[in-house]
Image (tube, rainbow, N blue to C red; front, side):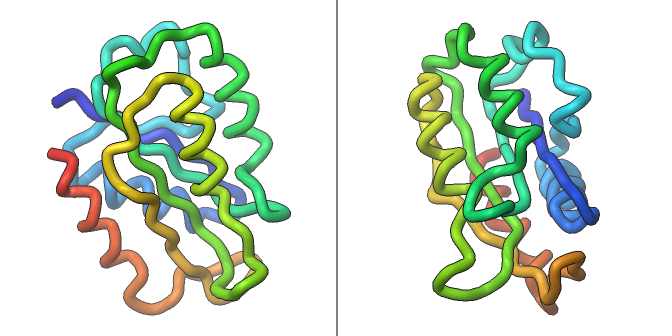
Length: 139
């Protein structure tokens, strides 16, 4: 398995989760601004992470998916996480990312995981980073 974690972050909370998942999987890791779409053929497992902004994924993640729209990701596995406030009206970046991944041809290997933050700038709520272990199932 050659895995990659691709994330966007504003206050560092999503980055913290992304780094922990990459460490657990032994995966490469890139912030969305550093992704070279032409190099994505080298991977068969993808983990995408985004903070939830206005009930949606980050603008950086949206831009990445636009760039990826011409590629063929059929047969590639993907999983998603987001960071957000806990609450009924928080929205979910991950849910929207999963839908985009399916349109790109990815097989979503597991249901998304949300990591909760305690305030606008974080930090992650107590015990949330432990959810990173969920992604070990992708090995």
